[in-house]
Length: 327
Image (cartoon, rainbow, N blue to C red; front, side, top):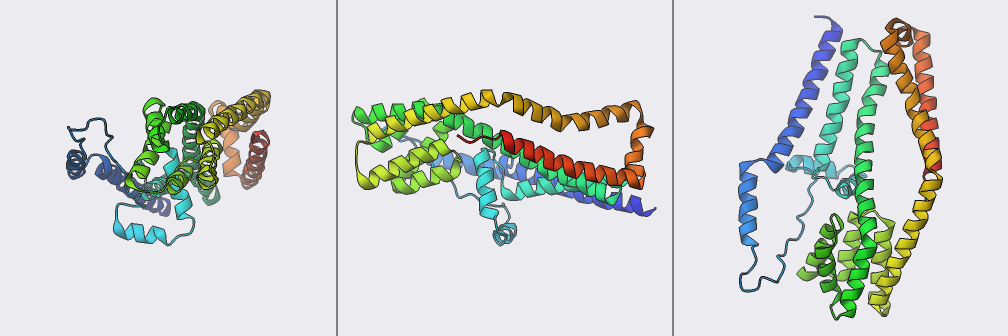
């Protein structure tokens, strides 16, 4: 058995092990009978009192764990930037822990390295392809986070108007949060419900709203949080402040829509220019494999590939930075 075969077997074993570990973690979190039994017991313990059906069931969010294994939890806490990345995962809305995300990224890297070893790619090219796996995973998580934040920002002005009308009708701020959580659409309803439950449990309004601003990476939500915190410290008509905040958010969203329309041509050009080289390379490889294979079999071709990929990466980053206009 030659050396590439041993390398391929080792990388394949590691990738399969990482995949099995991540799948086991998902199974233990969602399909384990013991976890289901525990969830049923907790559900029975937190059922509504039949005497007072109008009172909401208190379900505070459990402490977010970095891993389901204690040794991995202690090890991950020693790395810098772990808390920021964990908040990033929380903002995506996915039931994905930090350990599971890292296991998935490691599995993609090892799978790409095993594929490169089996196809006889150069080491540097295999490493470049392997790095694309975690980058694609982060891009997917970033897209999921952006979609969720957009849904929350879109529903926030109507929720603030509803809260303002509820307070004008005589409700307290916590009760207005509960009314808005019942009527608005998810995922905003889930976040407002969490804030209401924390306040109902005894956490201060400032701490509950600060937790909301950390779970939701949206400037519109931060405007709402800052407005309520300042009003709680200085006083004033909170219902009128919420109405003004809702109007401000609507005007920002209107301007952002105009900017998005005006920058549509640049975004389409950036997408086409980013995907066109890879599409052409794939098409030419299908039409004439021998012609394209010189790029990774000849040393001069490999140098051209590395230089081209580096320049394309800088160009794509520059184009996407140009079309990202903050309002």
